[in-house]
Image 1 (cartoon, helix red, strand yellow):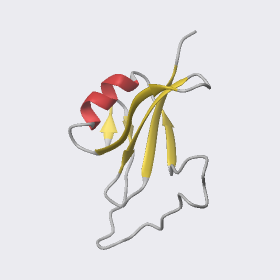
Image 2 (cartoon, rainbow, N blue to C red):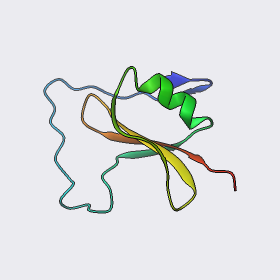
Image 3 (cartoon, one colour):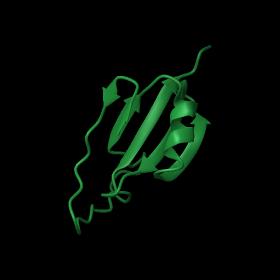
Length: 84
């Protein structure tokens, strides 16, 4: 994946099954948390190409976030600091 001047490489392994960690991590099951600028624009692009887990929503700690699941089952959170 790449956007603007940032590139993130994700490895895909055929037939890989990521363990279900939702039972042992009740506070949230994400694998990478990535801060970006203009998270809504990124969401508009990503929603056409990825499995969206949660649409953009403001969080109580001052971030606007969305989550997607990559082809290996990893949950990636993209966030932007909300201006106060």
